[in-house]
Image (cartoon, rainbow, N blue to C red; front, side, top):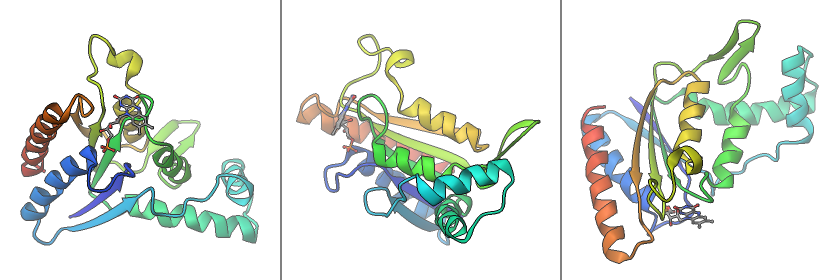
Length: 207
Ligand SMILES: Cc1cc2nc3c(=O)[nH]c(=O)nc-3n(C[C@H](O)[C@H](O)[C@H](O)COP(=O)(O)O)c2cc1C
């Protein structure tokens, strides 16, 4: 078994999403003694700006044209990153809510790897994700609580986005754990982290 942990928070010691994700990973590792974990920290890797040869490679692929050497080289970077998703049985996203969405570096990674014939196919029959059979676990941290003041159908572009992305690449087994009210004072923050960590351990026991 192989777990890919996509780290979306630039915080290190104080990250709520990472703390809860670590609780998940610890139990997952106990359950899968031979399991391997790949950490992909979106703040520490080089992500290609999506213009020039890599953009042209995308359109060449869509339009069925051969890639020139610069485009082929750029496309290798896409495939190298996408391979880390293909290798995984479980994809774990630890993600802070930023402006009710996801941090731009995580969106950047998703825009780089989510390519036709890489993570999905797209033709006259429609969209077909290539990562079927995998599980996505999203650990979503946020300062507020979604609900009456922030109805999720209007304010949640965080978990809904990652769930949509999972479906787009063919993954229907999507589990979400939220850690909310991390900005509601130290006590509430602490309690929220503990409650979510317990849920994460429980989830890991079943995966
Ligand atoms: C740039 C930025 C934007 C944020 N926007 C929101 C927001 O829209 N809604 C919210 O509930 N919290 C927001 N927060 C608070 C974070 O979601 C909260 O601190 C969360 O715990 C961050 O996760 P982390 O601790 O794993 O980094 C924002 C924080 C930052 C740094």
